[in-house]
Length: 219
Picture 1 (cartoon, one colour):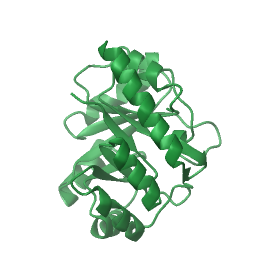
Picture 2 (cartoon, rainbow, N blue to C red):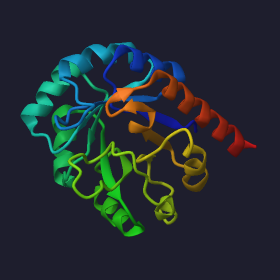
Picture 3 (cartoon, helix red, strand yellow):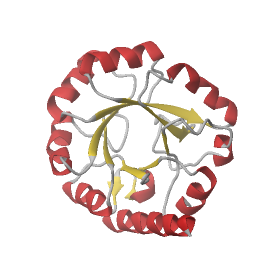
Picture 4 (cartoon, helix red, strand yellow):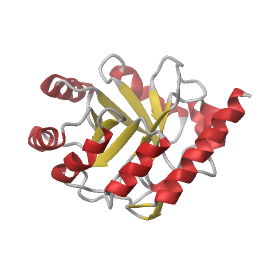
């Protein structure tokens, strides 16, 4: 199966265009006000129009209530919801039932034991994302530009459908793919010239590195 690539934290038409031109399967929009990648649902709704028929638009939230999700879904019309907070399996099921949308649940990983939490979400969440645990004092659950030890995924059930995230960039994506062979990857700060500022050249460079890594693996 082809590798899914999600470019997250998009804020401008130029960045969306670069992600789509590179072949992104998913584009993500952040609805966490403390993030430098935050956008309003109305802005995301306009930006996501370019992806219709090309890539899935993902709404990323952190412990959002129904009122917040109602507004996001109404204005943006996402293809998928990404829950990046402390949501329980019951909350994930309730969100899926309320909106009729697939849900991706994010887990913060530092060591293999952190993956034990995935079990109760299997059959509830449609997909998972494994991101690095934020550094001490960080207010951001993701987008901190740090990787975790990818060897932690060595014992993961290969039937688990997930995106690898956390500190990925053009320089390390080859090693990340070699060690984990994930179904998909997610990048945000790794294609930014400053926090929240996507760099078109860096997006293009990342996709070039991904293609080179995939060619190498196939060989």
